[in-house]
Image: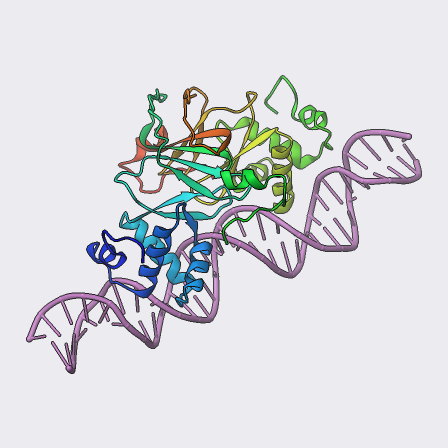
Length: 152
Length: 152
DNA sequence: TTCATAATGCAACATTGTAGCGTTAACTGT
DNA sequence: ACAGTTAACGCTACAATGTTGCATTATGAA
């Protein structure tokens, strides 16, 4: 219900998985969001769409998506994982953590050219750049309510 | 029991806090480590030193240290906070997450010169660079035990 | 020494995530 | 279209990491 290129069902099937209600709904939810969602946010999303779901099944669906490379996982500053659809190939971009609403945004534009001199002995797999600050929508409400929207 | 500049007790007192057994021991433990420790690791450390302590008190001591800027907190990739003593002023260095033992190392040397063009509307407070890979001590044991040391 | 109160220590609870396991239903082959 | 296999579901229970409330202790100041 959003992508016209590969359908959620196709995406799932192409990775050798069974196309189930929950998986399709999860992919659609992640795909519709412009920022990674927590398990809880995905659950709320499914509820709104009247898709019955189980907490554990949701976790497993999300894990499976990550495992297949369909989604990726970012650790939030609260200790909840956030899941987002992988849109480019190796997923190499920065994340912005809003310290006000707690949301995480993918900044596709920001791709710092690392030229890092690692101390000897470390084997580098990948680098992650996390920017902390206040997101645009929170900036607008900073002087209003102390606790801002924060997508539920 | 390690710094000869300001003693742990002084550090605490100077920030307007009461000098208690647990706080002193926690500061000493963090100060003695070259990488951030989890709550659990700090607890183990205190036990070894025969310092009686309570789980909750420990959490509160750590939080207080962070609040006062004496320590800083890094989110591990497991969902456990890791605490480290603040050694320089604004704590601006990279962190290395070992995907094998789960430890986090502060790489004081690595201070990437960000010249980031943020998309409009974002207010940047600070940037965090996280490097993922395998740490030196794990590299040595990669071909041996599947589950490596990992400071307990 | 005395006193106010910051910190403690305990018990209960909250949140986020996993494990086990019997049941359901998605795909495959006919 | 049907039946069989088994991936995935949906429970329940549990684990790990924190947090809250509150009565008690003991730190630092007068």
